[in-house]
Length: 225
Image (cartoon, rainbow, N blue to C red; front, side):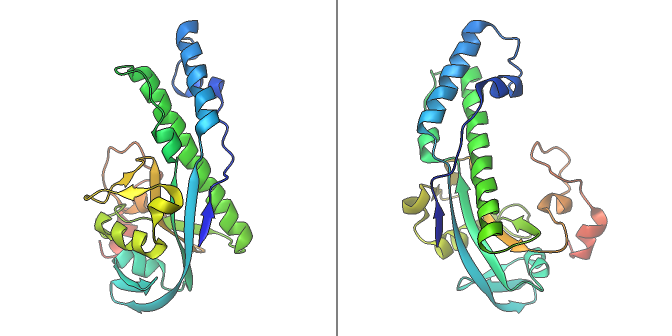
């Protein structure tokens, strides 16, 4: 078990103002944003936890690791030649999730959301760099439950069971609908690969602010989707 809870994170107020399109905002608003960033710098503790698992069995449409069976044709195909995977959860941290802004201040609330996303990005980037260095990983890809209909979000419960007490380790909990709290958290598996892959390539949804790659109908057909 690898717990990373001393991850460097120092958001930049001026960069945040630009990201929020507030560079030309009045000084009062800029001062509030700078104060929020200063408080975030003081309390933020992005975190990640990871468990190394070795593949135990492979069958049609399913694969075993971590003592459980995972049902997904795409996951099974992507792990066809893989021997080990890295089951992980990364989060912005409960400290930022508990940072409050004045009720009804949608602008500051939006800025806080951007800070949380930056903290999550820092946690995931730190985890990736840690795994690359610690385990001599080259090129990798990642998948997460709920990213595709082929791998439903209900398998989050299996992922959390493999890691153990995720709440105690890094403060992340699952709701009854398998959503994570804090909401700026991600989970999934990282695995070594020679082939670039992102779940977005298999998702036909046209409107998505998180899309990282275009839908590839030919690739989706190759997976039998």
